[in-house]
Image (cartoon, rainbow, N blue to C red; front, side, top):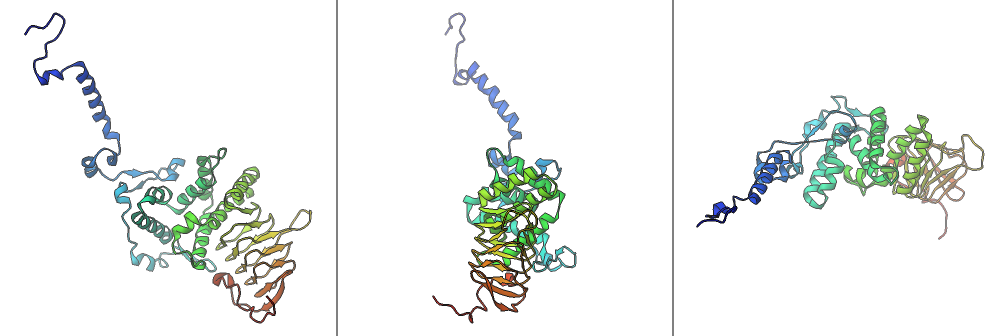
Length: 371
């Protein structure tokens, strides 16, 4: 057959595809193949996935200027549970990696490794949480990286971006490692004292009392650095999100637990020492309009029940117990129990650090009252 002038005769199925259309798609398919090597292995097919090596996942701190990277498996293998060797915890003391607090001894390595193990286990048992747990815990190389990420995402707003907050928290943690040490002590305090908590993961991700204290610590660091406008902005956002209002000038010790935390108010010159337990609705406030030292001082080992109000520059002695709903207007001696409105002493000689046992009712059986 003779084709008309200017037209090409198609004589076979093979030649039918030898057209500019095929040439166009051929070029594009070659381009796709050329650039597919840049696509992560788990996105381009099982053959590539099986042949791929372990990719490196960038930790949060890497985006802030550090040059370290965290090697991890592709998502299918990231969720495998990694067992912590038993001998590691046994030799912790010998390697001098224990942090000895008054009541919250912590192994830095084991806390973080346990967090990662818990995250992998929960991701395996609840696949819907796999992406969330990877982004909040498993993508990071340390507790401070994960904590900075969690707080930044909790406190972000339209005008206070998560990237800004992430850098702010990460810089403060690198600058002052005691912030991380105190966070670990607070985490251990919750684990030891809250019977509803059985995982470090729950504390980091879901306990707003813990999160509020850690965010306050960064605001307090900014306050001490004379960056007061930024500290006040952060404090305002903490109050909005967590319903916990702690002035950045307040001093909070380590091993502190805010149980439930909603409605806690702590004034500018208040001091809370180590290993204190505070329940929801507690106010450590001042009276009058005079500047200066005007807020309560809470000794170590104290437990303060729900709804307690303590007013003025008064001292609550170490290892004391304040019953729920009390209003404290006078100093409380050490090792005492006080209840009522206004609070009165009902027992002197409590056992050491009632904050650790969270016992709020023992010693009140001899108190005469009517219902």
